[in-house]
Amino acid sequence: MLHCGRMESQNGGIQPYGHSARQRMRDPCGAGTEQNGGAQLSGSATCTGLNRDTGHGSAEAMEGLPAVALTAVLKPSEALPPESLPVRGYDFDHGLDHHALLRSFLTTGFQATSFGQAVREIHRMIDAKLEPLGEVAEEENHADLNPCQRPPTGCTIFLGYTSNLISSGIRETIRYLVQHNMVDVLVTTAGGVEEDLIKCLAPTYIGDFSLRGKELRQSGINRIGNLLVPNDNYCKFEDWLMPILDQMVAEQDTESIKWTPSKMIARLGKEINNPESVYYWAQKNNIPVLSPALTDGSLGDMIFFHSYKKPGLVLDIVEDLRLINTQAMFAKKTGMIILGGGLVKHHIANANLMRNGADFSVYVNTAQEFDGSDSGARPDEAVSWGKIRTDAKPVKVYADASLVFPLLVAETFVPRASTFTSDKQHD
Image (cartoon, rainbow, N blue to C red):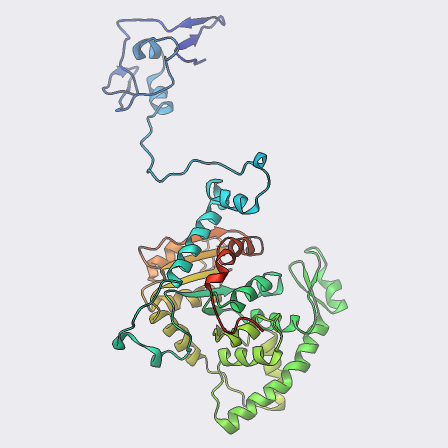
């Protein structure tokens, strides 16, 4: 058994290491080499923690020990980068301070540290967004090429989220960001649009993951994880939506309006006229909402049914493609906050390819990369495609966004709310 400068003998007594001229060797963690039992000792640093109590030299301390094991176990360390942080968690002896608790995540390790790094990355986005633009040269003014007229900022922030997050209480967090003009472009799926509007008509309920599908189907209840949506909610949605679709077709025919998914979402946000809605605030603050698969959900079902009654509605996705790409191309800087994967993740990232990559990026999802999916791809894969810039410091947090995103917003956008201004953010 090893001790500091001592060795435990076979009879249990503690004896100093012996001293043999024939076997004497250099410190295995110091400079120089010497053969011992076929193993070569080498090193350039001095091990610490040995022999300090007894004062014996390294040769005495190491005599008789297997050199191959010593060099493996006592391998010297190289210096860590100077910016390396010691691991330290929150000390509850200092009382409960929720902000201090969240700040301590940076030095806690694992996904807590990724959370802390995401907080820093979002603060960098906000810093860039609030930088003064100064005078824009005439040749740099691309307003005529950008179909969405929002005041330019130092950083255009793209927020993407999957439909389940709107079904959940994350809807209220997203609504807060949109209401206060904190983000510039939204990308979601059909469910991410319709679930917001349906909640204005009837509530979604907390259920359980283990509820049986057969029994729920017989009861007319739809399950989204541990959330429950009565089928009556979709009936109410149909009753509300059909007259709007009638009017859209009429305006298309009589006023030559070219509808796009983003224009349709803005129209629905205006028609719902409810400040609890994400899309009410999006249209009010002129924040475009891109949903290239808008027909893949209940909205698509309703459009399908409506086409038998009053056919002819056309949604132009090419115009929306131009919209999102120009938002990225002509931005001074861009930031991506993407909750979940699939279409919303890639649609935002691909738009940023048009400018050789986003400057700031935060992913929050639980997907893994071993199957080659875009959902699971780490930010570094996007760097290889030119969707994130090579000098960026992107962060992926492997976590459920329903846990993490409200905390991220609480540590970033909320403390700086007064720096975001809009004459349209109050109803």
